[in-house]
Image (cartoon, rainbow over all chains, first blue to last red; front, side, top):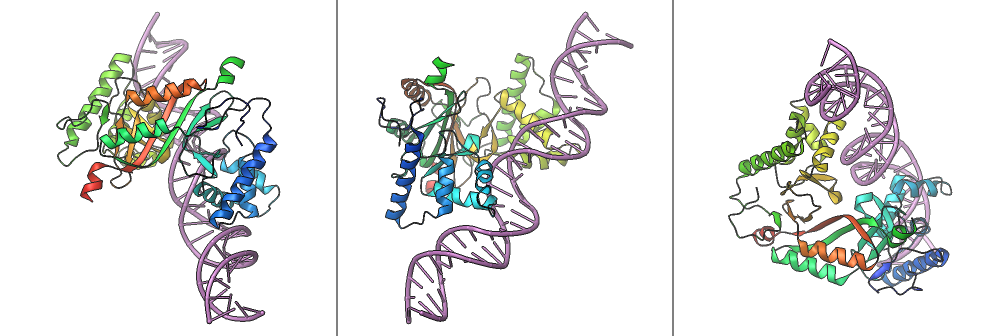
Length: 170
Length: 170
DNA sequence: CGATTTATTGTTATAATATAACATAACGTT
DNA sequence: AACGTTATGTTATATTATAACAATAAATCG
């Protein structure tokens, strides 16, 4: 589902999007990927979970749980906070969405097949987030940690700044 | 204020502490450092701010804003959430404490003189946090980001796992 | 199939985290 | 002392997240 029209290193899972980005296709690809993974793992991508995933994927910006809830409520009267948080917990556990800790928000994962933590570049201007999963970074961190006798379970790496488009464009 | 009895790379700002750690000294050193920096910058380390810093520094585990508030209230009747959040905002802005995003908690900074984001190793067993500020890591991240045309403002790097002591000891 | 168990969703309430907005007080000039 | 500025007090509320238990739907097994 990442835009592969431009040359893009393969560790970039979701790049910052340009104007030509066909988000409808991108969204459909994400849903199909999640369906396939659930099928394979014997998990139930229920209509509710699927819809929440769809709502999270409506943009390449992180979305807040309560924003998802507001949208969900318009079509699903019984939706309440637990409804959304449970769906997000499921989607997160299966790696279909990531939580951005520094924003208390969620974003669709660009590579739901493999499990990974990912590294996130967050543009302060357009609000978009690019996900990368760079082996050099994880290797270095794990090497550094190991030297201090620390064994890594998982990592939160969130980098704020200005994306290429916003740097030049705006 | 880090324990320098053991050989420790200098990019380790606050190591995981062993039993011999004299925390009273450690705490005093942190307060003195903050005083010195405020003096130098012409800032006011008021009794309130100083006390909040002291409360944050009472351990090498991250502390929650409302836990600080509870302690503060025992001696300061008028303390309310804004009291604590304002003090923490000040301490954070000046680099005397760091916020751990993935825990919604705060921890004393091991090197308040220089401004930096730091990288945090969070032990899931003892709850302690070690702060490092490794140039190799920041350099690599900035190089990787730059290749994608991204300019970094600041970074959140929080690594969960098991510290050396907990790995062997427990 | 029908009974049983398990997973999912509904529902109500509340906990935990954080900020807005305006009032008062202290401090630092001149 | 008068002034502007910074810090704190105070009340209220916004935002984010979970607990606890009930009802329903799906999967499993005899």
